[in-house]
Image 1 (cartoon, rainbow, N blue to C red):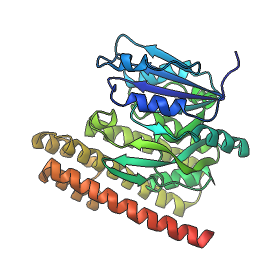
Image 2: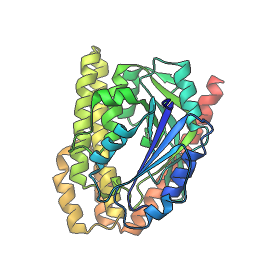
Image 3: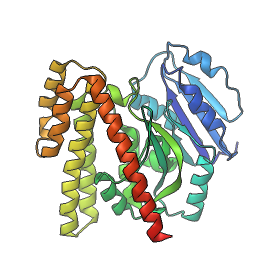
Image 4: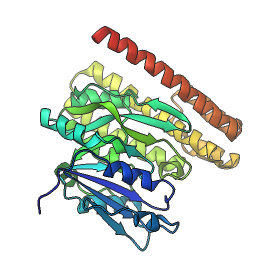
Length: 336
């Protein structure tokens, strides 16, 4: 059997209300040479019945009797992949019909690329926010510096990597839950990074029942810090510019603090008790105490009612979207 060019995997558990959209977006790809793997990780809500609606020769479906840890489930999907390239699509995300074709064409034009990500639309409630992205081809070190400078939004559903590279790195460790970042923060040091300039992926940001929204603040902080430390060690091994290293180290500290604060705010929006929030703020203090501006977010999450806090976050997202559009218009005006 000939291997497909691209494998799209869709892990799901108890997401009967949204997994169909993800599957349909994968089936709608205008590139024929793909396979789609949907793996139901022990759902009890009717997800299995939703999957029976789809019958396509490109589609393989798996049903697990019990729920595996996310890391183990991710490793299962990687082992099952037969394609040359790999895309992970969360069950609440979706991709445009030309996503796969754009990725394969970009790899064909630039076979030296370490991995590819696409311009992405972030969906935060009713707000659509264009994700920050770089040029079509970017040096790997420049990409890592921009990512930890909060200038690149890289979503799992928008990433395309070589299956062989993922397998060389090995399985996701059992104590890691940010599997996508675990891989591409390593792969980016191997060469240039590509970016599909069209917004062909859609990421649903922090819904109440997705995996990221349920992670404890302190666990999130430890994980992000570990990834930042690993990336910092690699960056220092590849870069000898002392000034640039200083800027990078400062960016990494701010990146960790912002990431922890954002997770804290979302935990508050989900309705965590104020006592639990105060405990979480204290436990995570070493990860953000040095960034005074971050304290505003922490205090806001502690004192503002969750409904008001959610409206504030959406208002800020709307302002950010408008500002981003102005930046893009000015950028195009000067370059075109």
